[in-house]
Image 1 (spheres, rainbow, N blue to C red):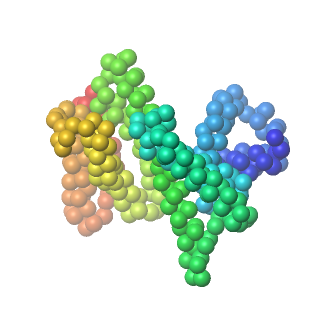
Image 2 (image 1 turned 45 degrees about the horizontal axis):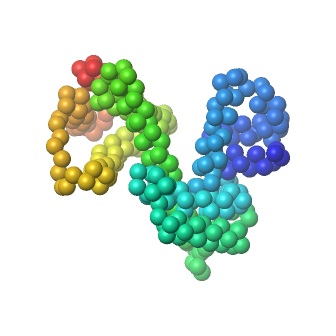
Image 3 (image 1 turned 45 degrees about the vertical axis):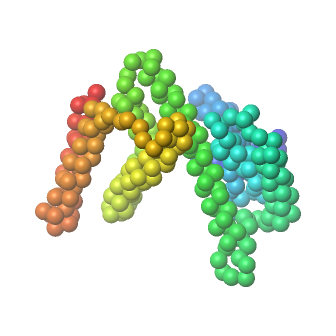
Length: 290
C-alpha cells in the first residue's frame, strides 16, 4: 500500500498515534523496524479494530478528515447501528426488511457523501447562517456510534471478567470494584490529574464527581431498562445489598462528607491533606471488601 494512504488512514482514524505518523512521514517503514517486539505486536493487533472504527464512525475533526474514509464510514454506519439494535447482537436474527432498509440507507449515504461531501473538511451545511448544522449532526451521529463501540468493548470486558472470576473463584463484585473500576476510570483519572497539575482544581474536582454521577444515574437507569427488556421479568426484580457494594457506597458517602466539612471549616478551600485522606479511605474500602 502507498505510504500516503497509510498516513491518511492512521491520521484519520486514531489520534493517539500522531508520533508514529510523524515518523512514518519522515522515515517510511524504518520506524516500524526500530520498534520493539511488543510495540510491533500492538500496532498489528490494533489494525483490525482501527479499520472497523474507520468504517463505522465518521471523522469530524478537520485535521483528521479524509473524504474516502468519511464516505466509507457513512456506508458502514447503518450496518453498525443495525448490529447494535438487533436482538442479542445476532445479525442472523435480522429480518429481510430491516436488512434491505439498512442496505438502501447505506447506499444512499455512500452516494450522497461521495457526491456532496467536501474534500478538505467535514460537511458544514450552514443553511445560510453562521452555524454549521451539517457538522453538528455529524458530531452527534459520531458520538452515538463511538458510544456503541464503547458499549461493545464494555460488554466483552464484563464477559471476560466474569469468566476469570468463575475460574479463580473471585467474587464478581470484587472484580467490579477493582479491575473493571480501574479500567473504566483510568481515562478520567488521567484527565483529572492533568487538569489538577495545570492549576484547574475546581474543574478537576467537578469532573471527578460528574463522571460517577453520570455512571450512577444514566448508567444504572439504562442498565435497568435493558435488563428488564432482555429478561422480560415484568416491572421488578429481587436485589440484595452485598458487602462489597455496601462498603463502597459508605466509602463514597463518607468521602463526600469529609470534603464538604473540610471546605466549610477551611473557608471553602481544600487542604493538601484531604488528598491523603481520600486515598487512605479508598485503601480501607478495598481492604474491607476483599
